[in-house]
Amino acid sequence: MKPILTCLNFDPDSTLNLISLDYSPPCITHLQSSFKSKKSKKYTFEVADAKNLKYEDNSIPIVIEKGTLDAIITSGVSNAVKVLSEMSRVTSRYLLVVTHFNLETEEGQEWMEDVLEPSLNVEDDGVFWKVNCNVGEGGGAMVIICEKCVRRETRNKGGARMQIKVTEY
Image 1 (spheres, rainbow, N blue to C red):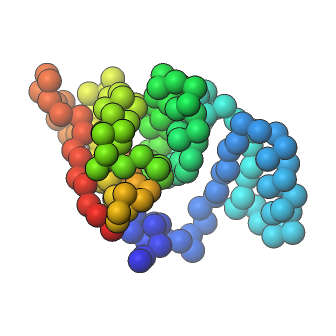
Image 2 (image 1 turned 90 degrees about the horizontal axis):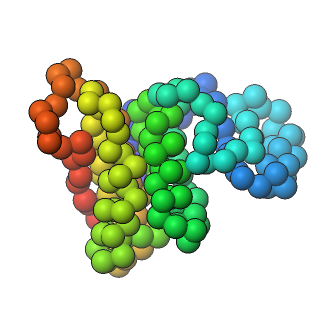
């Protein structure tokens, strides 16, 4: 399996800056001390509320979410939609979501309808999403790659904002 950055046409050896966010100050403190010996300016660790990110629209090329949505959905679908909406707002190109929800189950289909679709249903008529759902064999984790695209023409009223493809790995 190829590294994810290579699959997305990003050079893994490039000067990408990695920003790790968590709601928990002790977690961020631990990460900062763990990476202190690496002496790399590529890693930044910040305390943040995923429902209200400080970043500008379209300012981060790749946003990777692993487990946050699975945890936050226990406090309600609206919180999960807020988090994913913020992530879709700040990314300029890709949003990767790793989740235990699986589209082959009713629960996974509900998650797609209740969380993913409303989060990517942006008001900007010039934006649409290509969504590739990679489903684990036997109902394992699902990796969702959402690519933010810009239309050259405004879509027709009622036109699709998402193109979804499901593959098994």
